[in-house]
Length: 402
Image (tube, rainbow, N blue to C red):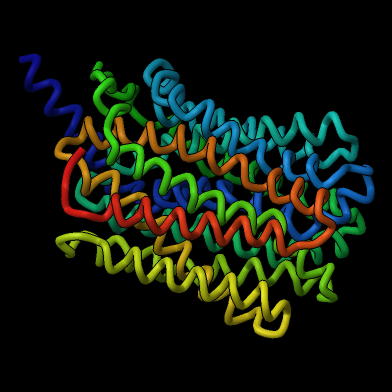
């Protein structure tokens, strides 16, 4: 009788899912839309923030690194908290904290700027870690399709945030505060769109399985994948934080410089859908690592030597490269492991180690500029990071398991 009751409840939930599938997907897309825009909206107005609040480049770099530090510190705790609250409820709380953080960050003084950034980082971390688990839970037979939609929504909104950041500030009359604060409105809207999932979903906690990660942390392959994850994130977030400021110092209009970051984001969209499909069909992914590295070096060279002359093709090929690198980082966690539990462990390790590495990028980039007074030294840091990414990528791409 107990088994029959479980089946009945499961069937009832399946029917409910069929009725509300559009609402659920809409909720997923709206949460995804909040996961990068609060970060990429800062880059185009970073010079304005620095001048208005009298912040040094190193402190501005720290501001953009705070969300990455949160990713590194809090990623491991998200599943533990979700086991007590449930995925849907914790995702709702994350949206609430995100909205509060976005409004606090835009108030206009230094303490609240950094406090808001910390809240934003914590909220995005929780959603970043939990949303893939939610997709797997709700769409076990459509994980690839829904995940693709999730990634496209996340990066498309991120591109819009970078491109329209300055114009939003100008149109609102609030300057940089309007540019980075407006995304709090999206977070509030997302709260209402997501709430039905909390109200109507069955109370199901994330399954807990105790596994040992001791051997994983001793695995050279696991470390290569974790460093690969970190370096591709370092490259992206360093460019997201500083590329508009670099281009503005070379004479590009502030509004146009934000769109260069948008081109990087837009160029990532198709490859984030195609890359995982290609990677899964290959015996190894060495060729894809070569493609990503070659495009990345060409794009960085275009910026360093051409400055604004070849900027559009340069940022487009950088976007393709980093989009492919991100897709590979995700796929390595699946392709280099034998079981689901190993994949989950590798994902946790990669995000922890990876975002520690990534968090060093923006402040180090800014500090190098402060020390040298020119942009070529911090840009050289990105070239060195690209070379390191290539070598750990080759080690990660060979057909073997941790």
